[in-house]
Length: 68
Image 1 (cartoon, rainbow, N blue to C red):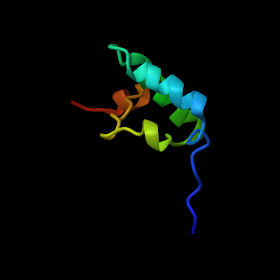
Image 2: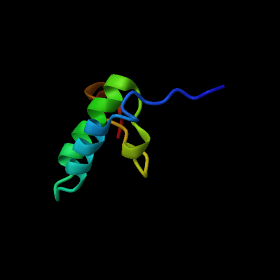
Image 3: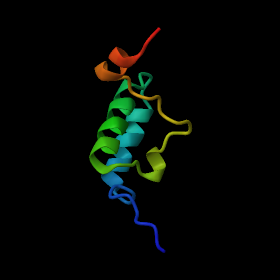
């Protein structure tokens, strides 16, 4: 079975934009870009994949259910 490539995998403009984001000192824009792409497409291209797993997002519902 052949794995389907991510829609941005071979998009040179997207890769160039991502590379420019990662060259900045502040990585906040990279985080926002990854979250947006992952939310919209369900995954990240191989060149933007995280080396470590992302942190689990804490939602208001999750925090309300949490008991200390």
